[in-house]
Image 1 (cartoon, rainbow, N blue to C red):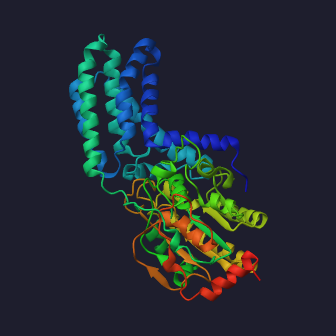
Image 2 (cartoon, helix red, strand yellow):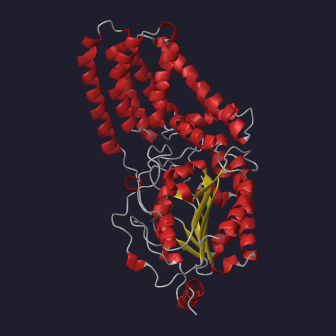
Amino acid sequence: MKKASAIEIVMARCWNVLNESKSFTPVYVISIFLMYYAMDLRVTSFFISLLCMLPVFLIYYVYDFPLHLRWFLLIPLAIGGLLFGVVEPNILWFSLGMYIFFTVFFWGTLYYHLRIGTTWWNFLRIWKLFLKNSDSTSGNVFEQLPKVFLQLILFSAIYQAEDKGSMAGELVLFYSGLAVFSYVIHRYLFNWKPVEYPAYTEAEDLPAQPLAKRVVVVVIDGCRKERLYQADAPFLHKLMQEGTVYETMETIYPARTVTCFSSMFTGTYPREHGIKSNMVWDLGVKVESIFDVLKKQGKKGVLFGCAHLIDAFGEYVESFTAVSHNDIVDKKIMDQAKVIYERENPELFIVQMIAVDQTGHSRGVLYPEYLQKIKEADKLVEDFHGWLTERGDMEDTAFVVMADHGQGNGIGGHGHLDEGERFVPFFMHGPMIAGGQRIEDFHSIVSVAPTISALLGVSLPDHARGPILKEAFKEGGGEQHEETHRRYSGVQ
């Protein structure tokens, strides 16, 4: 399995500009405007118009309109059209055609075919999936089109006006109204974000002794919980029956891969660790991670994952290339995971599997292909677990299987906690983990880092807020825990 090259890392960041709604919308609007007026572009007028557009770019950058909120975008679109008129209706048709080309053919067909080997006929399905997508990405049709149309109406009206100064009053009034409207909608209707733990994790909850020599975490990226339960996945179901399952494990907001991983392994929320989307403007988490804690205490943590995760955890990431056929990428990942594990011998080893997530994005989560990828993931996890067992490493290892986020309907979108995104599969297995236990109480993935600290007997990350998942630990295991401590601390 090849590492992600420097070019792939840069291209991954560039793709995030086109994928994230906040950055896509202004980039797309400006690009469409320049293409449409290319043969008759008045440079000075263009830059004056662009300057006048900055307030609406900023408002729509600050405020997402995902899920049902996107229908409220029709109100400013209608008002903007009435106030300023549609002076260039053909630019709207042009933008619609280019949007269909970008989403259905460039992204949904060409991009997925070249990167993961999806069929050339994917456009026959993916257009329907885009229409169902409700998350704030460039593929959210009913969020993007009202935003794009409004901005092109304003852009063209300003550009074509002979006396731009005469529009100043109307623009100020409209922008002020749009800002207030967006604030009120988000203040009173954007009410489904997870409730955060208000206090930091209590160090007093850490066990007196380490419970495990190692922790191995397998993250099946984008695995929708109920689809895992429905899938032909006998080994994962066996681990669930023999271990402790958390039935109400909530991901964080926004549920993007890099944001979720950052919360999982720092124990806190985006407002503190600083990673607020896959588009990372300022590299590196801004708080202590579990990897930092382990390093300070003479232990090692390794995350084997995609290039995006380097943006959050830097040196702790062993990257793999995500440019690989989706039918073989997880097999290559798990084969290389064995090589890295054997070479590094870490106390904490995390491996990210990506085929399930990529299938959800390219073919949808409610189709047989998605269940098939979960079935394949099951076989690969079984093989990896068996390999660890043959080495004798499972005797003192906590084995965790989870997803970073679920996936919604449509293109398997995720981020804003639509149906199928919010609650993720999460279960723990091992000699120190209670068997046959299902925890129904509400928990969050910010508990992952503190729980790893408890298992390995190290201090908590400095901003960890998630409670330790101590109900999964075997009761009356003091003698076993003391024996583990003696063996791995050098005490005789």
